[in-house]
Each structure stands twice: as structure tokens, then as C-alpha cells.
Image (tube, rainbow, N blue to C red):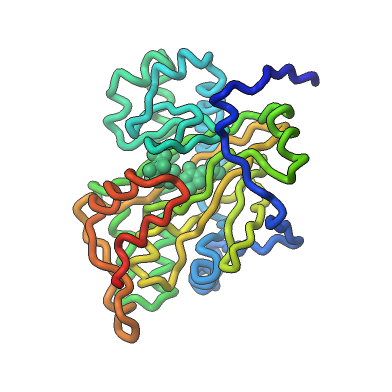
Length: 337
Ligand SMILES: C=C1C[C@]23C[C@@]1(O)CC[C@H]2[C@@]12CC[C@H](O)[C@@](C)(C(=O)O1)[C@H]2[C@@H]3C(=O)O
Ligand SMILES: O=C(O)CCC(=O)C(=O)O
Ligand SMILES: [Fe+2]
């Protein structure tokens, strides 16, 4: 197939690139795989959250049909002409976004749709883009979110059990709460024109799809198609590529869980590199607590170790996080000195 590409515009030139010499791809991959149906799942989850803040989940219980229906809706949406998609934007934070991520100057080789709650579907923003398919989109999104939230609760309960926390629902209750401030994101990373990728490969650099960051919430539940790009940062600061697996979910520990476990679990730094050939589609459910929820280390984590963090509400953290750039350390403002 011949790909015709235009010269980069000034806007494209301001994309970020990363040096990839520090990236290692190990075989077999170092990623922890947790089969949720196995009795050792709790122990493995705890180990993975301590070491990586990241793991892959199989036997997750989210029906493949539910996933495929949403994926086709996403593909249809992202295939629309740009001006039609832009009617669903700008992301404030709900809505369609293209290249610009957040409000503070981050740019990536990505377009996305952010959904914050059910009311988003009643807004006049989505109907010009989705037209008569909006009801179907709402219904497949809602089925997907329900199934993924259920899996999220199961994982959070296993975490609490694995950590020997008395209250099995210590984490999951935040997600079950009807006020839970969760966010849902559909990302599309189009194939990056060879002109942009090639230029930089010579220098051993890669175009960034979604810049490095940690997720602010409790956990994030990520599913993608079979296109690579996702990388995680290890404790020793090396980056490893996560082999894609469209039949599994990936779980990221977010900043809030790092705080609730008083630093025992680490929120994982991750990023997505652009791909020269294939589109990457990902759907991520960010499990957030209610806005008024006080976030602080749970008592069982402060028996033998002083609290590393000041108490804050999720509203306070979110407000502060949204004023930062993607790569910033957002937790440092809440550390006890
Ligand atoms: C640059 C930003 C985008 C982001 C808000 C922020 O100011 C810093 C955190 C970013 C992040 C990362 C995880 C999720 O994708 C996200 C929706 C979130 O909750 O925090 C994004 C925010 C965004 O894209 O609006
Ligand atoms: O698209 C992906 O695979 C990851 C994106 C991500 O980390 C995010 O949206 O926060
Ligand atoms: Fe993320």
C-alpha cells in the first residue's frame, strides 16, 4: 500500500519524541499475568502492584461481544471526517480531542473521546457526530462500562484480601458509590506517516502517541486492539514494551491507590509510542472515587510506617492534577515533608 504523506506542519513539528535506547523488550515479557479464576490471583495482584504497579488480567469476565461492539462503534466514530468529529469537541474535559492532551500544552499523535458520566449523552455535543447511531453508542458504552466496573470491583476486592485488609470492600466501595468520579476514554492512534517517524528513527527516537504520565485515579482498566505502543517504566527507570493482547485487560495502579497504600503500591509511569503501520485503538476506564472522598493511607498502612502523604479530597487532587503537564509528578504536592 502506498501512503501519501504531506510535509509536517509547524504544529506537527512540536510533537514530542523519546530516545528509545533505554527501552528494552524482554522475552518472555516481564509483565505479570493474573488469571482471575485462579486461587493465587490475590497474591499475584499484590506482588505485581508492589513491583510494577501494572499487570495483565485474563479470565476477566467481560464478554468479548460487549468489547467488540464498542470497538466497532469507536472505529466508526474515528473514521468520520475531522470536521464532524470536532463537533463533539473540544474536550472540557468531556468531548473529542485531537493531538492536544489536557489544557497545559501536551501534544501527542492521538485523537480521543472522553466521557465523564451518563449526562454526557444528553449533551448536544455528541449528536451531530453520531447522528442516529447515538442511542446504540450509548447502549454499548453503558454495557461495557458496567461489565468493566464489575471486573474492577472484583480486582479491588482481591487486592484488599491479598493485603489482609479487614474490610474487603475498602477500595471497591469507592467504585461502587453512585457518586464515583470515573472517566472513560477511547483513544485512536492513527498510523504515523513514515516521514515523521523515519526522520526521527535515524536519531534513535520515537514519536510519542501519548506522553509519559501516571494516572491520578485508583486503578485504570485498559483494553486495546492488537497494535503495540504501550510501554511502562520500571523501578530502575528502564522502559519496557507491553505486548498487546486484545483478549486481556491491563491494570494500572493510579496515584490515589499509591496514597491509600502509603506507597506500598506504586502508580505506574506509562506512555504510548506511535506506530508507523497500524492504528491502535484503546479504551480505558479510570476508576475514580467520589469527589468528596478523603484520600489518605488506610490505617493498616500506618501502623509501622509514618504516613507519607497529607490527607486530601479527590476534588482537591483532581483540581491540582488538571493544572499540571502530563509528565509532572502530581503527588509531590501532597507528600509530608
Ligand atoms: C495533561 C493532562 C491530561 C490529563 C489532565 C492533565 O492535566 C494531567 C493528567 C492527565 C490524565 C492522565 C490519565 C487520563 O488519561 C486523564 C483523563 C486523567 O484523568 O488524567 C488525563 C487528563 C486528560 O486527558 O484530560
Ligand atoms: O491508549 C493507551 O493505551 C494508554 C493511554 C493512557 O495511558 C491514558 O489515556 O491515560
Ligand atoms: Fe494513562
